[in-house]
Image (cartoon, rainbow, N blue to C red):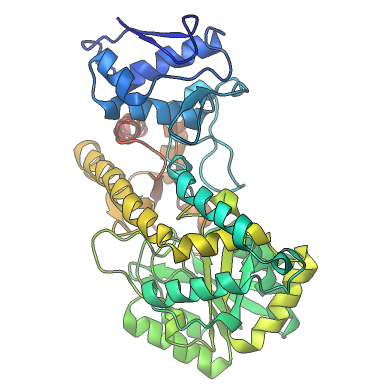
Length: 485
């Protein structure tokens, strides 16, 4: 038994017993022990835990084992990380059942529609649309906050126009033009509260300009553009998606005034729209006087190929580029941006003013400083190998346990789709998985009108490698149940 004293005095000790022959990962045993002591009231709120290196030495394990255990308990809400590297017992207890989510590395709370909900008995959650917020670069962000608070002129804290602060326009344009191949200019940018608000403002303005029909990829996300367009009175038409993204010939037949695309990593199938198809979409927009809405939601994370440039750089007068910090930093920042054709800027900015009088100035200026210092680039360089290892763990587990599933969209992003063999019913697999403690989404709920093969969406960004392996093993068991007579 390892007995390690915390910084809070003799009364707060971690009594952790590791059984190396139990077949249970060591980090999981550490999590269980600390979680149980907190729930039993044996570790008071605010008590500091030993540094990971100290605890690892006391237990005779690698530091990475302790780091993974601490991160999991932070995600569940039992622990909190403080600046300077201190980890403490959280002030408030997680809700009952939080421990059952022991294989995730992020709390269950999320925006509606983003991933499978954690229910009672859930052991692993492959919910999509999340980023690992435990990796948020707090120290670097704090430096930028301090810089903003000590150097920003007073007039920046007054009401501004609906486009946002000029400093962020300039630094974002520099970044996007350098990294994403856009043709952005500061005067054509509007800062918004994430993609959700950005697409809402844009749909309002398109309706004002006479739009009557909008085309969406089929399948596509059902929690933003589809809902908002219907509520605004637009006809919604689905454009089928193939292995290489949206089928452009179907777009020509759609009689749409705008189309929403995820061309660099189609959601959810992962296809990349080819150069020829991009050019054809641009020609379509130019002939019809239509708008292409480019949702560039996770293009910064590419693993197996060179980054794919943004469509906006091909036709800045017809493409609206939508970006967000939700997948790269944290969705709670509520930071997004639109790079607009010149004729839409004033109306979108006016809609933004009516919506909320503008996004928080301090957050915008902080992000501008964070970008200018190169901290955003450093954060992305640090996170790419993290997510790649998790993706590789998922692909390896699928090869081992479920070789007849066909992964797709593996070159980028934070999720993978795996197509099911024809004899497996998608809904039956999802239901059976839930019975075994696995939360996962199928593709069918995101289809608009079309049909297609059954598939499963594996979000891996917030899961440790051990949890990913456990989840795929649970899925294999569930599929055996479905296949059984």
